[in-house]
Length: 163
Ligand code: GDP
Ligand code: MG
Image (cartoon, rainbow, N blue to C red; front, side):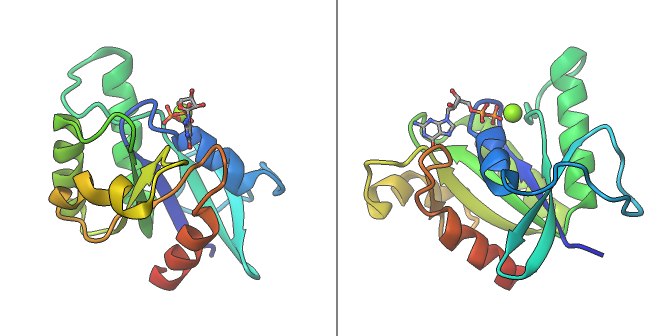
């Protein structure tokens, strides 16, 4: 079975942009893999010669109680359960938010492997882009630009080592 990587974070942090970059040259139709539900968005990515499944999620608004945001949060939590590794995406331009802290706590409780990914950092040095995010307590943040591609290769090499 292919390892499963979930893209998790608040809405608008760039999860789908990263998903598209990771799966762009791959077949978007995913072969059946037991334990996966089809109502999330799956694609296939590749690191070196190794394929993995990547799950895009609508966005985790952790305090949503009902309506569309609650449904998206439910989907995100299912994706976390299905995954071997979570890429927790935060927005390097918006900075850290209260909801980022809540999601970080949820991820710690999930006992999944987590890599903290600071997106939208094109034009910033790693040190400046990462500085705010150490306080999430998830270790060294990886800084990327999903839309420009900066840092994505390095991120996925690291993801591969953690799978
Ligand atoms: P999602 O809701 O987490 O899936 O976020 P999207 O992928 O839909 O992106 C939300 C917005 O952020 C869009 O306007 C993207 O173009 C923008 N965005 C995504 N990645 C980057 C990036 O690396 N840099 C910048 N500056 N904007 C980005
Ligand atoms: Mg999206």
